[in-house]
Image 1 (cartoon, chains in turn cyan, purple):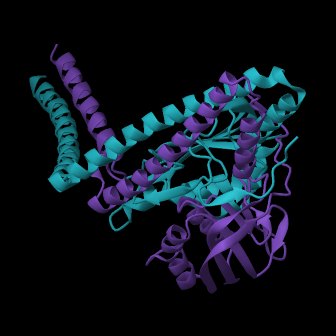
Image 2: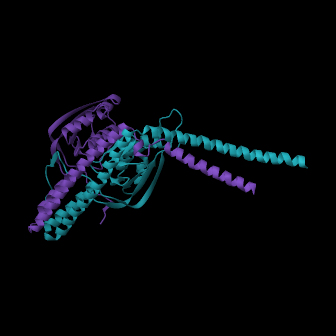
Image 3: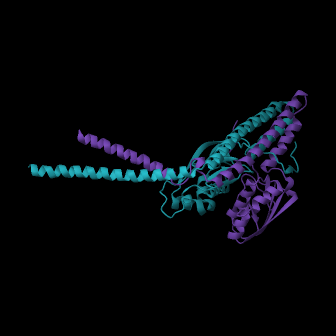
Length: 253
Length: 223
């Protein structure tokens, strides 16, 4: 009896031991990888880089402040115009035109039905020999998504809350993406207001299927789309004045 | 008892592995912290953010001037009509609803550009500070995008031939240096696509108003 019991207890202990040893081995491997990556990154962050990074953060803070001031001043201008609407019929017509032009140009907050597109970096482990930048959202991915949405009939678009207007650029600086004046981090949420069928047209548009759809599938970029009954998109905040050109004619009432 | 301890230990070990794996997966590709960016990227970010902030400061000063004009008109009992007209001129020009004339850059393009290349050119001009852009006689608005049509590229429903002109109002020097910088958009397109792009500064550029109705069909202003 005891001869049969001893091997069973030994095998159970051995099985636990193997499990724990295996788990500890995986944990050790992952911890080492984690340690190596953070150690190399830390050592790579030189003092010069820290100075530059501090400057970037300072400029971003300054920009947030400027944008708040601009939004506030735009609101004050709008209030002046609304207050003076009652003073004459001509002014009322003028203010109606102002509102239409603001909506057309992306200078008013708008709401309506539309689609939400979300895209984020891949969660896959980068295989040896592969370029890690293939597994992150690139500036071209956002440009393609936006081009496909406009081509599909979108009337207003934001990327992470940045409203796209006639002067908007989507620009890559290394792995960073600037939209309008803002440095936007991943994940990216693109919201677009548009009529019926916008989502279907977007997913069939060559600007979407040509590159970004393939990258989503091949590199495992995180991607999701959804329809929305009522999106609310903010107005553009930024400079709308021309320095180098003047309007040729004005539609004066 | 010992089995319970073992289970608990295994649970803790598994939990730790999970946490470490998530951390490892998240740290493998994109540097999340600004301090992790290479010095070259940081320098470019500083240049870009600095230029954008200068634009914002100028825009803010202009807005304060408009507000001052409204206040002066109000205090003198005058109508705000002229101030509002000026604001309408600004906004219609910005939106592409009014033609604009001024200084800038003209790109004469010939060759087999695809829609992506044309959209990239427009994006580059916008990033370099172009205030108004037209492809041939088609004003580029917020909603304009080049697409491949049955016979040629199409912008806002208008076919664009193999030879076309992009007119951009903005700083002639700034636009030219951005477009012609080594490794820039023109260099890339000429290298990878069979295209020729000639950039010329000009003091007399006229960019037409859009012919597209930009009034939204479903979007409504938030009141």
